[in-house]
Image 1 (cartoon, one colour):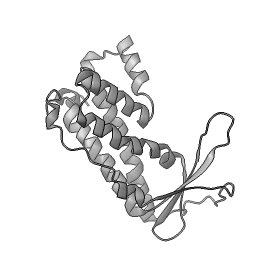
Image 2: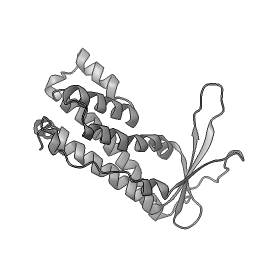
Image 3: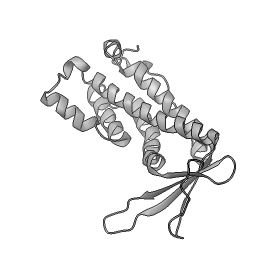
Length: 201
């Protein structure tokens, strides 16, 4: 494991490239709700595999962000059960991907400092956070062969109607995003999780 105090040795951050997101098209519908018959055959087996990899990769990333925060704060031994320290960290990392990323960034800057690596990591992961809820809570369909559509109702400010957002991409785009998520999760595991905490799992 890389010594986290020597953070210059942390590997390059796997990027969500502009091309990756450009392969998808996001549009706002004004025609009203999409009516779709509900069936387990909404998607082909190939699409289910791509979607499964995508969603599980976000779970891995959320998990490793949580473990990295714990490690940066001294590891499991520094957070005894049923204490204020445990309750505080549970409140900070008990949320979604965006909340865990914010907590990791804040903890990194407190423990290591504000450097170019953390700026790049934050910038790179912000877009993934923006799409996470869309992917997890949207309705996935396969209209044309190889193309997936995910319809999601995005909350607006109080008193305004939610917007219907439709994300459209080929299977390959889901697999590329999943790969970037998994590589970022592995980067966190290899560089910010202590060997003793990994052994304790």
